[in-house]
Image (cartoon, rainbow, N blue to C red; front, side):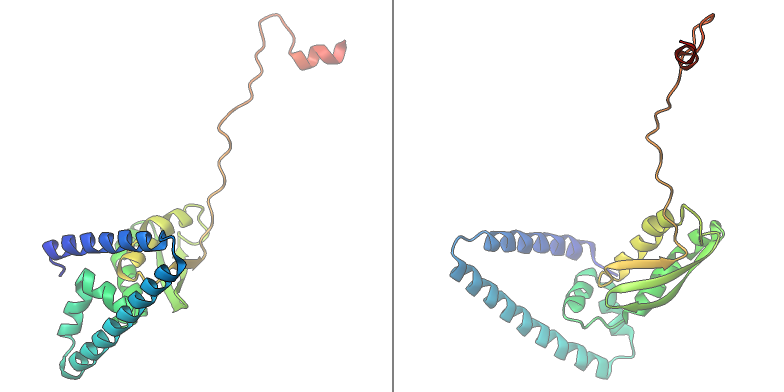
Length: 193
């Protein structure tokens, strides 16, 4: 489980890093900007190598409980993802997300099956009343994608067989023709003239 104080601190640190990166990108001198960017990349690679070694040591001595605890900590999980070291494979995390939305899907008479994850794209098949339903893309966006992106931020797109885009609503304006009592419609009068 994530620790609230740690999550708040981590959010503040991420915001600070993003601010500093934006300031770095705005530097007028290309040489200074390139040197700073290269230094940050080298530091990131150094920390990634260190994290990789820690994960290897833990994996050699863990029954899975430490890996699970690390995966449940939001900050640690994101750091591990950044370096390609997340202990839970992306397919398992996507399946976990689908299990979480399964009651919602079933309450609407449908379900979703994971076909696979490739190059950051989760491929699903919508089944039951979700397949071919115009609201299926809305269900996909609101429930399924949200759940997947929360547990697998390394997935950047969700494609689903059977998802149908809802019809584009009309402008909502109706063209009405007013007819006063005792007068012929405009079109009728024009024809007789």
